[in-house]
Length: 113
Length: 111
Image (cartoon, rainbow over all chains, first blue to last red; front, side):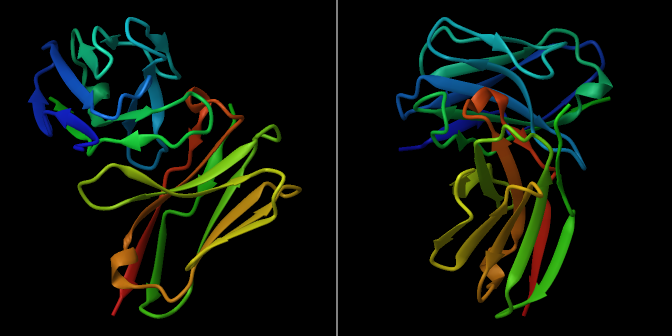
């Protein structure tokens, strides 16, 4: 089992460019999440999904879009990147939406110049 | 909003005990968690405790919960260099989509 994988590991974007971060899990988990981690702050939830074809907003959804076309994949899109989106992005998945352990990917470090 | 706070740094000598503290503000918190993040890796769940418990022990790890003061601590006995990592405290009312994380405590273990 690879667990939760994220692609790419690093990326540098110019302001206004777009990109998609890919998260994949091979544990047949229903729930998937995208977080961002900023220095001196805890992880903040951007969007999440409770199953294939569903998405919902988290705490900080502005500037991001997501899609869950396949159960194993959760994509995070930035349509027009801004310097404020410089962060480390973590994807996670869980079997259920309540107290079950979340499994995290290794993260994507994104810099927007 | 509700906050989770932790000190940012802790340094200990190998073999000593480490105590990482966390405070939270949401009195409705049901589950409290400790995650560990090693360099270049994602967060990994270390342990968790339900809000109706005072203490939980798991090998070298002891979690203490003072619900009245909204204070959570993680004690690592006989700390090893492999324990060097960032430790995140988190709490929720039960749904993973409403978890709140602290900023993380970077534990450095010196030989």
